[in-house]
Figure 1 (spheres, rainbow, N blue to C red):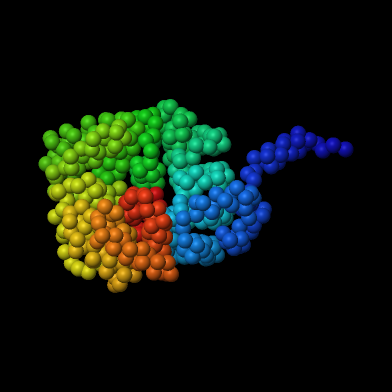
Figure 2 (figure 1 turned 30 degrees about the horizontal axis):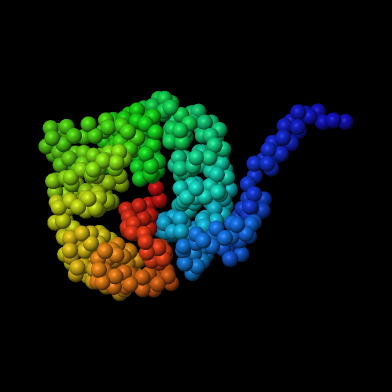
Length: 474
């Protein structure tokens, strides 16, 4: 006798067939294959479906085997027991993941387990989704489908990662979330749709006035900071950003929203900042002059124009802290080193203040020494960086010092700079056995850079510094 509810059985069978067809091929990390308590598969034992994939891994593996295995062991241990310094582990893994397909495979396994457990608040969850999506790793799509289909749409990390994935398979899920009654989730999903070119931004502009302050602050850090450092987004995002800027009272977060808008082609924030720098309140003119310069610089980089002249405003610690996207209490010096990178003469006195006490013993001093040694002719500071990398009193700063020494000694610097790079490589080799995650990451990055002598991109970038030293995973 046929079942009474035969239609339900047929529908269920069709669902199972569709899932079987859609299931990606290759090594399985699904819950039906490996349990939550199972250890990660090490790179040396991970199955490789085809010889072509194995050859691809061999050509693109730039991270040292010893460092990669250390990270894999730490990730395995973190699944069994959450470490107190998970943010630092996640930040370090996020920084070196682009160098190693094998490590990204391990991150994919970790992320799948955390999604299955519903552990959206874990730093490794955000690290895995963001790293794999930005690297366009093939695991990212399946993981994002699972995350977006879970509670709270996978959280801000999943919605942010979706912005960096162009896979059409995510479109139905994002459209469904964009219709959610929770305005912050709907806004995040609609933002991803606009960035991916699937929406004209009308719904985004309607949702913007509904965003609460707490959600706006979180979205600024979780969604817009990654977009600010990425490629330009579609201009449809501009109206919604205008609404959010109108409600934002923190100047650093206002600047983040403005920079995303400028990169999308909207010059409204720049036109708004310039008058405030000249005719606004006296107490805020200095800050607005730096904001106007920053937006002008972003506009020039986006349009391929000549960079604007560095501002004449003299920075102070309070002023620099106000222009960070982080809370002012963090005393984040990101904007100071943005000025230093531009060649601003007014930033030199503040940089000199940070290196006044030797030996160098903090992050700001090491970074200031980098710019002064490379761009201001302070050859003595290269030796100070080398000493901090080789025998610094603070173990957690040795990797940062080695990276600063590497960048402060460009190939065009002659024999002295070449000698300093050799010392940086030797310091990186010594850091491979360090118990500090930051040292492992910087050491791996330096040794990978040493294998590519033709590339001259700076190693100690603001993004890598925030990930590795502070564990800020945006």
